[in-house]
Length: 217
View (tube, helix red, strand yellow):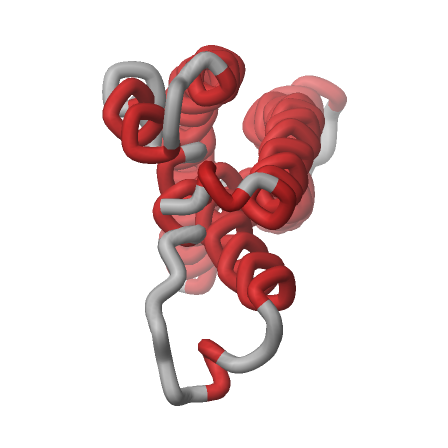
């Protein structure tokens, strides 16, 4: 009964490790494909939207023109945030420059949260998948040794098969982690470039509204 119980327990742990690796792999690849598409569109949208903005006659005209370019709503929230309304709360306190800085910063943070969505999942998968695979390997080797001990005879043939199968789980963990880590680093680089572009646009927009009263909404 002890050998049967160990076998069933080993199968359960191996099954759980395999399912966990499968779930992490599916989740990371879904995010990789989705974020690749999102960041590709975002790069094009930000470039075309900022170009269209500076070619517009007014903020109202720019907002209307950008509807066709800013498909991911990355630039329009910055423009919308500059429509300051009279307020008796602390949100409306201070000079116009201070108010613009505050609302543009808040809008920029919301846009960046959209771009960074899913990054924590990729980072987590990249960090823990190898250890999950290692856990499955250690458990598989342990179960293989128990099986050989109960058999009473140890040969290279008895060792090679079970240990080789256990080591495959380590390779599976690495196969899950490596794409997630690579995608995380690539996406971070792209998001950093978009963040720099959006920050530059927000700064230029603030200066425009402060120095050109006719451009105010």
